[in-house]
Length: 79
View 1: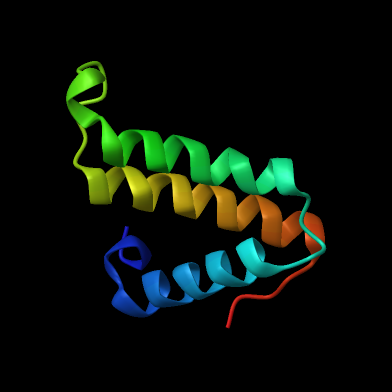
View 2: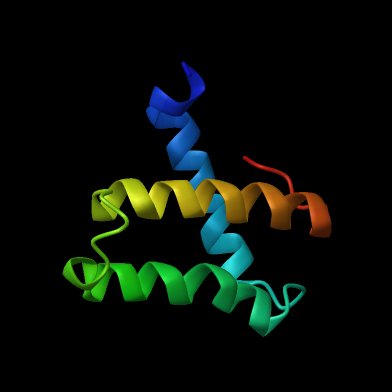
């Protein structure tokens, strides 16, 4: 829990996300697994009342899951 409240952790997570999105190693459809749900939720959060989560919280949850899975799969280290 302490890690999830750390600004250093989230800074490293979003740096890793940027690396993964711009990396040529990561397949385009795997990038879409992250981008499409986040963009849809940011554009139309009122159309999805079954997810009562703030936009930023939703993005952080999806970013953490995407970053950890893709970093493990492609052996990219967090900085």
